[in-house]
Length: 636
Image 1 (cartoon, rainbow, N blue to C red):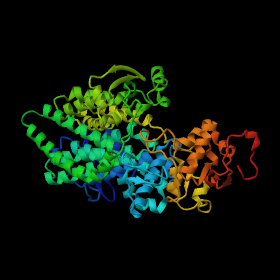
Image 2 (cartoon, rainbow, N blue to C red):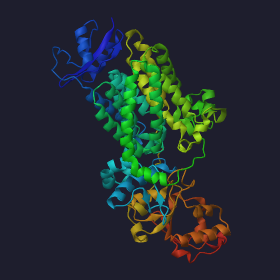
Image 3 (cartoon, one colour):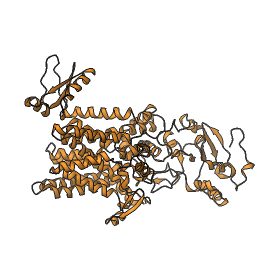
């Protein structure tokens, strides 16, 4: 006899009801024994007892059995809280655990530029607002001229929301905490969407995990890219569309909420907002094609209210747009499309001894590593399409998945790093906005589609096939978990005592322009944020399109291959840009920095930093042999 899992009952406090998971014979008693050992009481209802099953499915209270206390049935809102708690526990106790053990340490992917750039951004917005500065232009980096932030992703929604924490505990703590919660929060938002569509807790929990802990999210979390890992606004917008479709909110409420959601996404990351716009247009066209005559008026009404919401979003984004359109957009020269192999090729460390996977994983597919879907999840999407093609939503999701993945290839199809085909619409990627976009980032939308597909697959009726559906779902979750590695962390903080103990105040004047030289990516912006913008820095990396490959000014970086011409250029740069000092990170110094003493600068060590006062480069001279200078005492 089949059984329906109708609910869990807390012995002394509450009745917890979760519907929608059918179990074959014997599983119910096994779950009862497991939950009993945990202090819970499992209530199993025979599906032939239709009043009890209907009560469980409709949200009514379960009948109180002898020996238990009357409680309350868990509402969808409380299910959302439970889902968020599960996601947080799963993530914070595994991959993110080393990050939260020392929240105040700067140790997230310190060889790249992005984590310390976003640390800087989290401090910049509260600083700019409190000092009545233009937050879209800064004189703190690229000093003395400064740098426009019009085409720079400075995540103002996160920076302003987390400002109290930043002011109390510092921007490094804020970055680490935001990175730690980003994936569970994104998974939770996808859970809400799936729960609204299916009404099933466990199916929606799996769907949320597919989105929130996808390769896209995990890869960008390891890189500390806050603009890419806070993806909750996309499923929230989809949730609002579903709620509006169901008539639970009015069109006026939808327009306001959707407009605010899209405006937040605009400020969080302009490229995702642009991608969202394109995806919505495609979704409306696909919806019109699949809906049939009776549903097309509803699609037209949706297009109308979305258009009104866009007007609100654009109006709120005008301050940023006015600055961005007046500036120079970035130019990307790298291949940014999805590599076809990356759909099924996991990380090199997760190929399980399969030769062809190991070969492909070691190939040049790193640019699209965030697009890994995995064979189990692709199989799930295929089986859902085959078995439930009669469902309009399944047809819609399948068409959208195919279109999004194809669009993520960009202008060309690459296989294991080799170009195999030029797509017919390749010319579109030469348009002003598209040529600056990373095509592979469209996979974020593909993972949202796959999340909903997973929830629908698990929520399908029929207890006889439940074992098959859940077995495949278990493989999906296992493949996601297996591809998830711990975050890329250093063993300790990379901020020297020179900054943490405030020694910079005795060595530098307030607002003095310095050059920070370190193997740590964007160390200058990190130190500046930690010192509350006490110093200005010459240099700083903001993005690949606007900055050089280094966070150092070109005139400084070229000293790595010092020639008399480069030394003379450096001397002119120090004088014209009023550089007061060069700060060398003693623990993470590049091999070429001995050139500073060879050109006449004399430094001293304090707090793990070698300070070279420039004195307007008055003592600078041409290159001399390194044997003529040696380190003596604390001088370098």
